[in-house]
Amino acid sequence: MNKKIAIIDYGMGNLRSVSKAVEFCGAQYDIITESAQIKNYTSIILPGVGAFEPAIKILKEKKLDIAIKEHILNKKMFLGICLGFQLLFSKSYEDGLHQGLNIVEGTVEKFVPKRNERLIIPHMGWNKIYISKTNKTVKEMYNGIKDENYVYFVHSYFCKPIKKEYIATTTNHSIDFCSSIAIDNVWGCQFHPEKSSTVGLQLLKNFVSKCEGQNGSN
Amino acid sequence: MVAIRVIPCLDVNAGRVVKGTNFVDLRDAGNPVEIAKMYNIEGADELIFLDITASSDKRAITLDVVKKTAEQVFIPLTVGGGIRTVEDMRTLLKAGADKISINTAAVLNPNLIHDGSRKFGNQCIVVAIDAKKDGDSWVVYTHGGRIKTNLNVIKWVQQCVELGAGEILLTSMDKDGTKDGYDLKLVEEVTKVVTVPVIASGGAGKKEHFVDVCKAGASAVLAASLFHFKQLKISDLKQYMKQNNIEVR
Image 1 (cartoon, chains in turn brown, purple):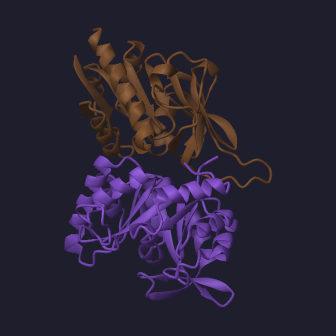
Image 2 (cartoon, rainbow over the protein chains, first blue to last red; image 1 turned 45 degrees about the vertical axis):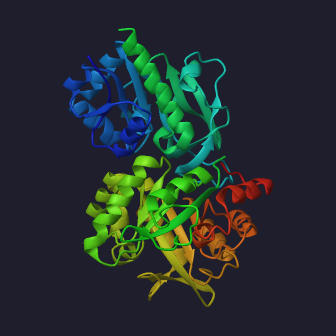
Image 3 (cartoon, helix red, strand yellow; image 1 turned 30 degrees about the horizontal axis):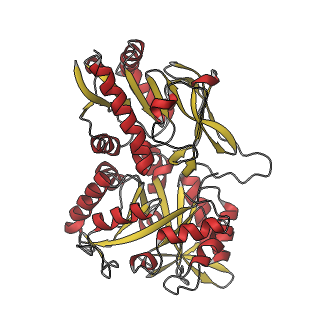
């Protein structure tokens, strides 16, 4: 079993910043493109920038969807970032209605301004995270990170999990939305830790050490 | 609420920061990577590299600067200057840029905005507009402010957003270099007609100017020489903005 972190390259967005940040956090990584490779790794990151539909289409075509689900079912570590986080959900309303990986029950919906509200979309820039007090895994994910720290977002759609206990953090942009989830081995964040300076790097370090812990107990 | 972004802009020529030569604290005064690192520590929310390299054979150096910066500075990085094709965009994004800023090329070929945003997402495409007052309105200039077009700024900015621009970098040519404040009226008029973030540029001379332009509707504030020549520290500026009820990181 390969103890490096596998970063999945499915052609959506720039992997370089994610891989460089992971490297900066002291971990080794491989960039993988094929579904058959996933079973060789104990930890994977699914990054992604772009639209939902082409992304899920590529994942399905390459059978990466099945491999990712197996990986998660086997209780191995997973981190989804931005689009890679949204893809975990059941369905998205971005440009129509599209089925997601359905690992987390819920929807991906567009920000809509309230009446007479001038809402800037995309939600782009640094915003605060409010850390959940009820989610257990959140302590590992947000170790060393403070409530109301700022992280960097770029998105027009947000995730809405049905089970509120999955929510690790919320963020306000017209509404309070779920900005990250933590479900044992499944971590996902709407913001970009790889672009969130020291706070983001701390989250990635937490992921790396959780991955190492998992490898140690194998 | 999203915090207002404070963005230093670095003019890069053949791998060196051009306006930054007055640095005293840095070993290598004009090294963009070192300057980027310092700004990151000071609390910059984003960095813009403007490639002002005139000769195309030296563009590879800029690419290397982007690469090295992205390896060490983990905040968003926008790169502009001389980008003409979707292929140019891809090359820069692969090197580590998060957003691409286009100016003259967008005016000459508005479809580039569409093609780029379709390919890489709206959030990736920043359209930079150089605006100059002309009677009661503003006119778009290209080629680094040398050529006047017949485009009205307000109409052009709307067209850019329709084509897929995710952000507007709005420079007032009248105010640029004057240090007597941003063109507030321009920012007000532009932010009235679009809901994408607008980065205000041109005219920052003191802390108060930043607060004023945020109140006028800017989502981000840009300055170059003011930061480069240490007339204003980003951390001090943010402290001041916070005291004036502007949300900053």
